[in-house]
Image 1 (cartoon, one colour):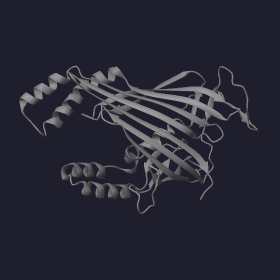
Image 2 (tube, helix red, strand yellow; image 1 turned 90 degrees about the vertical axis):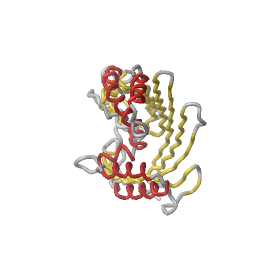
Image 3 (cartoon, rainbow, N blue to C red; image 1 turned 45 degrees about the vertical axis):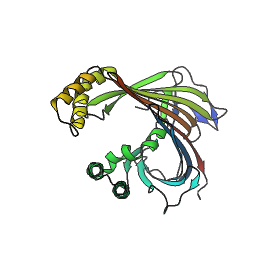
Image 4 (cartoon, helix red, strand yellow; image 1 turned 90 degrees about the horizontal axis):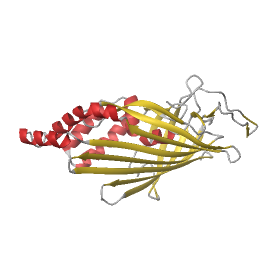
Length: 307
């Protein structure tokens, strides 16, 4: 849920009228299209005590004109630099990502799914892991352009999370969304919270914070299915009853946290998230064993003249 009903926040001749306590502040994406965006993403990944992994990517992003009936448009992400080194379409480790997005630029479908699957198949064949490769390809074959979008356009979705909001200034606006555990496939509830931190009409900027956590009650209800999923996975290597009993005993009081915190700087004129800073922390504790993973995404994007 990204939009909350409220009175309009009027902008006329580039000057914002003061908002009363009852007003929300709509920040829609206002990009006519066709348009061109320069996007830079830096990603870091740290697992437990292992060294941090870092990678930087630059994309040329093209947006078509929005459709009058749905507001949807076609978007293409083309990778141009990896860790500062030039990349051409021929040398790129990834094909273009072609997607359809909604009015907030959130992906709703991956439009070149067949091309993405073919590229993934080549990488898996080169890895030499036939068992893992076969399992991954079977999963990919079951995807549709709509179900593939969250998997292959996660960065685009994360960046768009802060776009197109209509919130009360300085108030927490919470909502619930469906989620699914990786083990066992049990459904859980994710609780998200938006907060419009600041609106600066003179600078033409707004600051927004978004967070998301697992609802603890839904997690407790899902733990039995999670344990079954982990046991089934471990049984592929060792199906002894003794191992299963040990696993179930160690997981009886297991805990899982998945917390995301993102800060967005929004350009009021365009509604584009000019800067995005998202940190995700996942911790899993079972008995004396524990694991922690921190991933961070920092993105900047700016409208540029079309090349």
